[in-house]
Amino acid sequence: MPRAVLNLQDPADLRAVQGQWRFAPGFVPGEPNEGFQSQLAGSPARLVDYDDSQWAICDDLTQWHSRGFTFAWYRITLTLPETVQGASIRGARCLFETCIDDYGEIWINGVCDRERGAIQGFNVPQRVLITTDPQPGQTYTIALLAANGPLGEPGGAIFVRYAFLAFESRAPGY
Image (cartoon, rainbow, N blue to C red; front, side):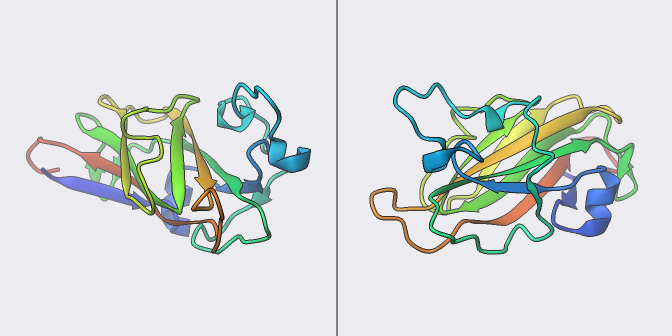
């Protein structure tokens, strides 16, 4: 199956999707105790309209964050381009691919594909369908929840090994 890929860590590819990664520690960034409280219904950081404008700009997803916190969020809002690597995105399917150290969830426009986008295991690559009908100009907010593991006694750091936006097509010449 022909593929065209944007590396969402590459400055030129980020410009192509008009995107910029942001980073904030905590399950609910900015809140005491990483935002944990009894009966918490979920982190608002997963939602499309969440204001991340005060978060740190993250130019390097692979940079280790290990300041004693267990959870962190990475967010990007991107706009699909007309073409990727010279091919139209129309007629392809659009996927987001990543590997979050140690555990991760992927939220696309506030929704987590519970089969593919939820925690899969320790450093497991994840691949989530964004759309089967990508259109130039469509915007998507991708929110990654990273967890430092093992959860019972976290060690190491939080970082994203890679982040790709892939377009796959069966069309000839793609």
